[in-house]
Figure 1 (tube, one colour):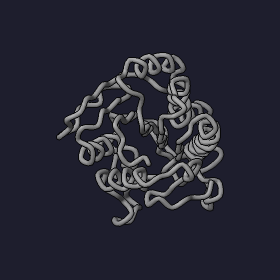
Figure 2: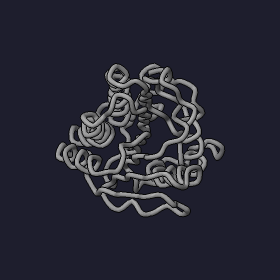
Figure 3: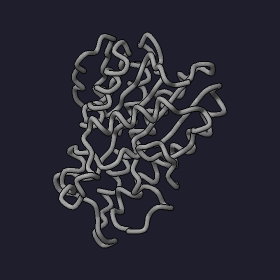
Length: 246
């Protein structure tokens, strides 16, 4: 049902995994129209023969809602697929907390801004434009560590909290849009630990077979998305398509 997207919206498009996903989309669908969002430039994708339109925007700010809505309104078509790759694990001065005492309000709020609000604002921008009879597939890149049921190690407070909040957003969105649209699938997906800047400081202790090339992660993610159906909506999925506990 969702296996032949004509137009794809890719958010957080300048990130390492998003770039690989864009490349995989173009490999499978050379003529696909790409709508890309990121704070900076997204760049082009080799072999792409379709149109690409880009908007530089800070999705963590509420002002982005109107800007993105206008951008989408001016597009020749609304997206069949939306893939939101926005996420934050660390910056130059902050990383995952190992204990409660390391928690910092500003860092938690920044994690929520990037890991949650970038997805919420994009959904708000798109929401008013949705057409009941047009199929829609939405996928937010989340994380297994955001699963409450799967948390047996603790730690990583800000990242876990913000990703758990994202997962609840996806669950809520799947219910609301499932009522509004005739054919809709809204999921969160865990890509696995991928060799990008996000995971770079933590790769030392990761087994070689558990650290994936961006191209491999992208191939898996797009493969999972192509096989989804409306009845799969509202799930947190592993990179192989199997459900993870919320």
